[in-house]
Image (cartoon, rainbow, N blue to C red):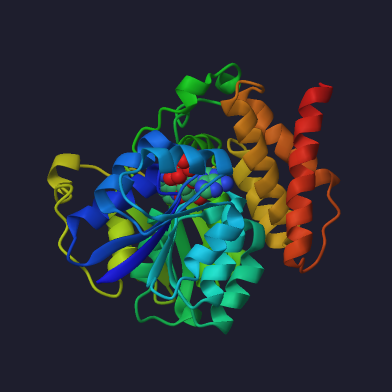
Length: 384
Ligand code: NDP
Ligand code: MG
């Protein structure tokens, strides 16, 4: 029986993790559960699986939740409490499915406590990959990727040596606006942006898919997770999201992992690794029914966010922190109807241009820069 601490349990990945836990009650126990403020989503999960430790965003949510619960559990709030939660000696695996760089400190804490981590929270690796991987190596903790592309690469890499990799091929569906030209992006709405053709995901990552920033964040995530330089990481458009990513080796053999676009499959694999359990929540991939798979070259002109991410990743230092913070803030503003779709990339570009890169930033510097960039983006929008 694996005891699980789930961070971000009310989100898209969180709820799908609950599906997987419920499918295998003899294997998994939801021991600890953290979420932000969505009590409506959290309460049925909590009442059903009765985690012993719960962490929420603030005091008010804590009071509200404890009034509604039918059993006794430890309830606390704030990032410090999440840090304590992931260090509980009973816990075997931490699922990090929170959104954004708030996941950074709990990730470092979980690593220092020697916990396995099923890792969805890509913003954390983008903002501070060098710190996270240094701690992971020092504590011999493996980050098990939940992101479908990285789960595919992880599986395609089994048993091979890093110096035998020719390149990693990340597949990209193209997001909700893949058939639009740049001119046609003027005036697109939030509702249109939120309609992803293949995947059902949280709002932020769905917008990131439409701008292609999601793939940019994933390029940086792949660089850190698999210790592969940026010139060996390529992105290719693949409409159907059936091939989740590939690894080409020196002998030009290409290994790929395929599957239906269902995040619960990589979530389950991260939880059962290195084993595989049966999966009943969706059908087998029906290639005869799909018939054809399509591929297209990626265009950096069409998707400048991808280009910015490669550049920030290559330069490194504090620049990926800037990229991530500006993006998180700009997407939040877009989702709040304060800016247009094309302003997202403009706001990020402005912050990247203005920033003087700090080499090898420590945690404090990263937190300071993250906050500063968020303020700058908000100020730029108010000034318009
Ligand atoms: P959602 O927005 O659906 O969920 C985010 C979760 O984080 C919610 O449970 C939210 O709580 C919680 N949260 C946010 N802020 C805090 C906080 N300060 N303290 C505690 N909890 C907090 O996001 P997704 O599930 O879509 O994405 C989560 C991560 O997984 C992201 O990094 C994303 O890039 C990655 N990912 C997602 C995929 C997907 O299919 N959705 C695919 C691959 C990667 P609440 O809502 O209760 O406030
Ligand atoms: Mg992905």
